Amino acid sequence: LNRRLAAFGTTIFAEMSALATATGSINLGQGFPDTDGPAEIAEAAVRAIRDGRGNQYPPGPGVPELRLAIAEHQRRFYGLSYDPDTEVLVTAGATEAIAAALLALLEPGDEVIALEPYYDSYAACIAMAGAVRVPLTLRAPDFRLDADALRAAVTPRTRLLLLNTPHNPTGTVLTPAELAAVAELAIERDLLVVTDEVYEHLVFDGSHVPLASLPGMRERTVTISSAGKTFSFTGWKVGWITAPPALVSAVRSTKQFLTYVSSGPFQHAIAEALALPDSFYETFRADHLAKRDLLADGLAAAGFEVFRPQGTYFITTDITPLGEKDGLAFCRALPTRCGVVAIPNQVFYDDRSAGAPQVRWAFCKRDEVLREAVARLGRL
Ligand code: PMP
Ligand code: GLN
Image 1: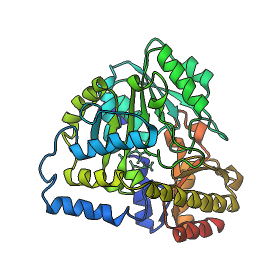
Image 2 (image 1 turned 180 degrees about the vertical axis):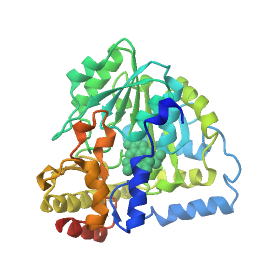
Image 3 (image 1 turned 90 degrees about the vertical axis):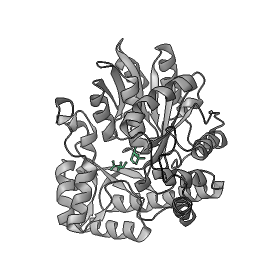
């Protein structure tokens, strides 16, 4: 393994899911639902395969039906208008979108300001591009974006801001004022913004505001999302970007040499999913709000300090009240102690001591599974 990547090792998600399987534990670690998405959407994928739609290489930018559905989704929810032919690109999940965007837009030595704690692939992809990560730390208990710290982090080498809202792992949803501060700085310093909005339909207070919808931002913003989260088919790996033509074209240049194209039949099925009625999206959100509260209350009763998230399907906690201080050691021991798996947030920080006592729990699970997990944690 080359020097750029040697530091990254195996992702925490693979390590903790393997531990869950090996110990037969309840897996509240890696973020995937334990119930598949709508049966009619699964049927749509089967139909596409049977009908021979997408069984051979689909078009490089993605199947036209899906690009149209993505553009229509941006219009329907946010009033944003994107040309499905030149301003939409389908990727193999948001993961590929992140990699392709960073590899396309960064020169070696460029600085990227990214919210910390960060989703783990950000750091690895910045390193693959030979660029430099500059963390902007969200601090407990509120995990707010500090606009002054953001401004102070910009240097003449800064090329790009890498945002994530709703934010994994903290559950922070950037406020209109925070988004405005980001936009003002990006415009003033002529920066590009890559914004990961995969949890756009899991905002519990108010509604999601895409950064691209702020004045002056559409032309400099690459917006990333994924069907995995919204439609509960994480294994299908259908993601996308929306951006102006020059940025889409740049990202497409890298994507063509990463995967060339993404899997065809699933794209047809997700085109149908995006067109589901508002009631689907409302139920998805309401179900997860109830699950958030079920798990948050349970974790609080079990003695954790709970930072109730405004979005995503993750809850960050602090283990200090349990007499613990190292989340990584805690998470490695937890399956044998009580049969539950979680994720230590410290691996998402450059300065691991900053997030040492933080542990993340996924609540995209059936209620009885959450209740059983809470019962087990109560016996710690
Ligand atoms: N970004 C964030 C913030 C995530 O939590 C995830 C995890 N699912 C991804 C990107 C990757 O998404 P996908 O599974 O579509 O590759
Ligand atoms: N995004 C998921 C999480 O944050 C995991 C995805 C992965 O395993 N790479 O838990």
